[in-house]
Structure formats: C-alpha cells, structure tokens
Image (cartoon, rainbow, N blue to C red; front, side, top):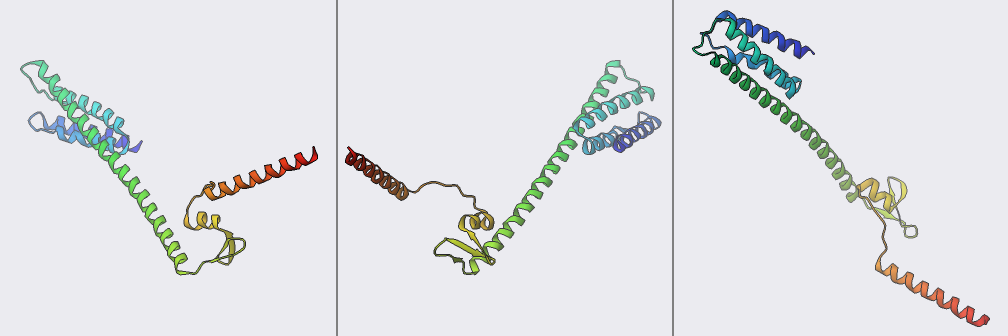
Length: 193
C-alpha cells in the first residue's frame, strides 16, 4: 500500500513540475519513475495500472499547459504514444523483477543442494575411512555403535532408496522347492490309494 501511495505522490509531483515548466521542457521520462516502482514492488498489473494513470496525467498536463497542436489528433496521438512508452517500461521492469526473483530462488535451491551434497560427501568419506563391521549371521552393519540392517544403512546414511525384487537364482530355488513339494504331495496321495 505504501508503494501505491508513494507512486501516486510521485506521479502528482512529476505532473505538477511538468505543468509548471510548460511544454518547452520535455519532462515525460520522469513519469517512468512511478510506473517502475509499481511494476517492481507490486506486480506487472500494478505497473500497467500506473502506466495508464501516467498516460492520462501526461495528456492532461499537456492539455492544461496550453500546448497547441495544429490538429487535435496529435494531442491524442502523443498521449497514446506516452502511454505505450510507460506500459513498455512497466512490462520490462516487471519482467526484470520476475527474472531476479526466479534467479534468487534458483540460487537458494542451488545453495541448499550444494550444502546437502557437502554433507553427504563428508558422511561418505567418513564411512569410507572407517572399517565397516558386518555381522556374519544377521547381515547387520555396525554404525556408530548400533547394529542396523544394511537396508537401513543404505537409506539413512547413503540416502539410497531401495525396493525389493527377486534374483534369478532365488526364482530357480523357489521353483525347485515348489516342484519337490508337489512331488512329495503327489507321491503321498498315491500311497494312500
């Protein structure tokens, strides 16, 4: 809200100075200031609204200052061209702000990713430097004095996410066990008959 009030105040000040100096002193570039403020601090639509108001203000000051044109059309044309210039400035400044904001967000994400990478690298180096003890019976690993499963170790310390599948060797063993089970079941049922 402060930016809107400041921008409107600047627009009134620029309009007044433009009116006082008359039509011989080209002052329209100073109308860019309130437009740029709104586009930067509020939004592109705020910049567009201020460009509209600045265009009207410039046209009114031009009319009230007694600037005479050979044809009235030129007054409207000049007002329109000033409005277009104000709008373009608002759009450019708004785009610059969005680009800067996006760049800052990307830099923050990159900084966080680099910090995570440094932490992970330090943890991996620490784990690589120490001898890792694995239980020969339970296949658990000793980390920081605690025994944990290898899956927990990979997930919690190396940030590796696991899923489960079945190896071809396990499939062959499962098939062989199933076939033995069914053979035993069939030979037992044949003996009962």
